[in-house]
Image (cartoon, rainbow, N blue to C red; front, top):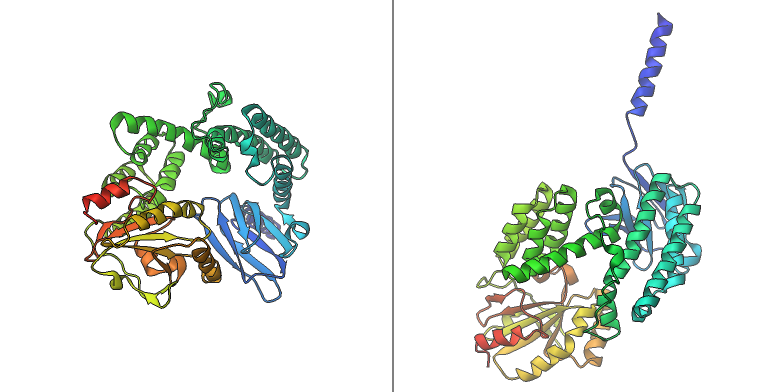
Length: 457
């Protein structure tokens, strides 16, 4: 009888152990010439985990994450990681010689060492600059086809990686190839300075009959996700033209009819969390999103953004900035500018689109000099880049009122306007009320129309 009880107990213990799978990832290691902390970010930036680094450079953290691709960042160097529950990965590197000292070991390291090797192959064949987008159609296709073949050979030869991962990765490599073909027209037009450039009729023949309903690939491959997004934007532009509505709202309508809930909700949320801060029709944008999204958490977050944006609608008192450092000397607050219209440019020295607006902004400032309007540029550069800000203002001979925000992206002015991307332009009236919390850019002729409508002269 006792023997039977012992056997039952053993079976029970074994069963309990089998029913308790590991649902976390352990990331640990050591950094030489360390930073104070590491961040682990999902590619869509929806997840950000801070990993503390000890005085001796060691770190260790237990993370409850979904299987996905993440970026480990020390402030200067980045490590692409594919993390699955149960992984226990050791990471070490010297921040001053990152490429030659980075090592990954432990459970789950085989896939991640493959990703490192993959990046090296990509750099060898494609390079790290934009020169590849200057190639003609045939040479461009040939270059990326060469990369596709090399990566397929690489993943097939890798040891210690599951067949399931290899099958997904082979599809991902193909999606990456197709995505590069898909963006060629836009990128070549930009970098070759040929705005009228159009690809040949058969250039995208490989994309024909592509299945846009694969949830597994959508969750795994960012290139597949981009292809689905691009396909829906194409449909949205057609709908926008046909029904005379904005493209952003048309996109929400098009995505809203996707039958796969995961794909639909993800695309809707990706569009809304930033797009809602830029839309010209907040009410319609929000209602269209809510009527199509079935993800409760996503809806809650977008509703919070909507309510916040309602507080900075036309006619509402503008959030204020106080005692921002003025490049010309002293400090400036929004209240100091009361009595004039104020056109605010929120920017940063590292922001390419911001810098492209500078010539147009300078021209605008010259045209409206001594008029009833002040042009205010607020830098959201970090305090560590203060010198870069001063240098650029001086070298570019930036005009208007040049200010440095008190807490970069965490300043109250930025947060209260729900600014999540720059450049961002805001127009405030002489009484301190909002005219447009997402005003046209200086390069947009609609801005002059708005100034004329307001009789700014």
